[in-house]
Length: 78
Image (cartoon, rainbow, N blue to C red):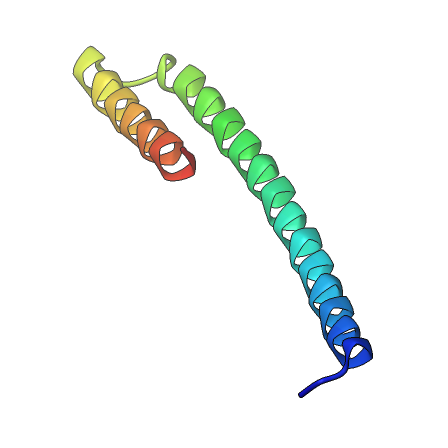
């Protein structure tokens, strides 16, 4: 049977492991937020650009695709 000192050392190891995982999760969340912001900015820029060319139907088709893309993005991170 392990001693209390050995058990305490194992708990310390688990705490260190947890701390490392929490840091990695925070990094991933920050990266995700940056990616989402960049994608939203790109979508907005593309939507504005679409208004400048093509027929009404062509512009609407591209805008519909952008709307679908944005919805997919929002559902992925929800």
